[in-house]
Picture (tube, helix red, strand yellow):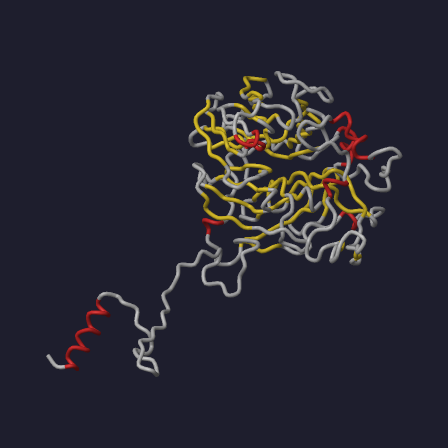
Length: 444
């Protein structure tokens, strides 16, 4: 076989075997040279997007939503306090829950502090500069803190360095906005009964669309008519902590079963989940306080909890998922509180702010330490994550409440940033990366 035939055969074998060949076989000096152009499957939220960073994942932010409190007459110098909760009844009716108001301050000019050290400055470029949750009323937010000492903590040491009406004020805890972000309802008549409103809901199985507000400092859950004109039920004993059928210890979140029964995560200072029937009658509870049997004081025993800060229900299997926040794990129980399994959060430390399961049967959460929105399979396998901390629209800082509407828009309440945001799905976004739409059965 001559030299030419041998080369042709070698080329044919190489192509048949799928060996990537460059545009030139030999370099100028006779050495082999290969330019590979092997395609890599895109992991971007929008495949083949050019220059993307996915800091908003499969979404884009809706600029200027919602309108600020400063647009209201007499409130020009004020803005949202710590944004605690958000719920989209529909794209045109969204509930906003905040801890009062804060001064509407502009970002200050950079100031350097050479007496502390070289290159020390405030604020740091590109990063948030004011923590709303640290400055908004009423203080005493962390696990183990006593709500009765909230105002003492907020005012600071003697003499007090914060003053109500100057540094913060207790107004506009509950607002309703439309699709454009216009403030269409102000439930200011209920500011007086709130102390630290934590989460807001409408049960998907309630045709009357009653509005529920969880208040962790009041140790109570309030049920209002949809128009906000009447308080129709109070569950728990306002102002009195406990752990039985009529008392909570700083409850945090709720989740419903299709029969209208519901679960309450109880809570910051409590270590249990309480279940009630559709009328609010206490049925059972489960969970207990642990002493910390694992590394770094984490509790590892099933059913033991530390900061029960989120709850969700998989309606297909009737399993109850509990965010055991300080133990960095998701515990899973049957509908009557029997322990089934769990999965751990791999990042240390982690601080999950909530959990939610949508119609797609995926679990969504936000980690306050990594500032990322996370989407998991129900067995804990990661599907996708996105988010970055910053001071421009579309960043995430302390997402404490999330909601999706029937069109797939995502809404977030950020307790640290002191703001609410609306995101719409990006054109061509991978639908697996979107946060699932809510389950609806009794109303649309």
